[in-house]
Amino acid sequence: MQKNKRILFLLSIYFFSIHGLISQDADFSYPYAEKIYFNPAFAGLGICPEITLNYKKLFVNDFYAVSYNQYFKKISGGLALLILNDSQGKGTINNITAGVTYSYHIKFRKRKKLNFAFQVNYIQKNINTERLVFNDMIDPILSEVSLNTSENISYPVEKKIDFATAFIFISKKYRLGTALHHLNNIFSKKNNIIPFKLTIHAGKVLLINNIKKKESKLTIIPEIIYNKQSFFNYFSYGFILKKKYFLTSFYIKHNLKFHTFTPIFTFEVFIKNIRFSYTYDIMFSEYYNILLSSHRISLFFKINCIKKRKNNNTIYCR
Image (cartoon, rainbow, N blue to C red; front, side, top):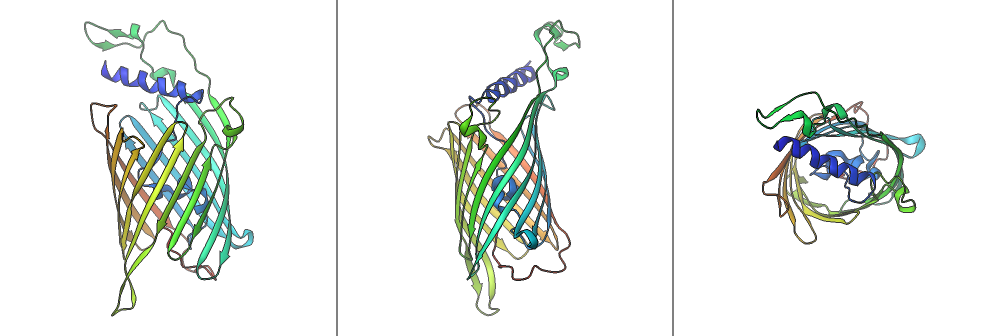
């Protein structure tokens, strides 16, 4: 019975999101798990082409993402391909997004760069009615669920072309970016599958040098992130620590009135052209009697990384 209530709860959230009343994009607790999803202006920022694989587990939600990201000198910028699937209730609800991003790079002296990006996405939302459970399928005495039902319900597949834009300024010491997702929903209130989303993030890169070896010993990046979508407002702030082959981060995420409070821990290890990342977070909320936690694992593969790009600004972008 409790499982059925969960499915019905997810369905109610879906119907609200179709009409643009209450809805949020699925996200990664650690924003740089998928940089293109977080801010499209990151496209082509790295020296080498990169393939990213992500999986996140939260309650009855499974979130998958795969992306390819590369810089092209002929177009003075980067291109990225991104595919996402937010599967809820073991495939009862599927939110699929596939998109392409172009980011134009403007280089300045002293290792400064300004990127402008435009992203086009295809969004599809659908419900698998074969996985739904209705009242007449449940035997209240035996607590068994049959496959027979008198209900005859079909839900249309929601499809939409979606647009986003973003910019990011990165220097040796600072980074500042803004991303605007679901731009077309600003001007049209019809068929708003997901409402407009605003992301603003800022960080400062601190390098602690090893005086004897004359090289960076430790990189520290304190950062603050603001997200607004519909009437949801969230702040995330924390820091990233990187030393040679290891990276760790700690963030705190909460809404304006602290109704929800989420500590987020991330650990990464670097092995040549491969990185493995793991994130764990736990949500404390006034709306739930239980603690909700999520796990996220990522793999990053750098390919064709023998020759470095000429005249590349050596800016730390992670």
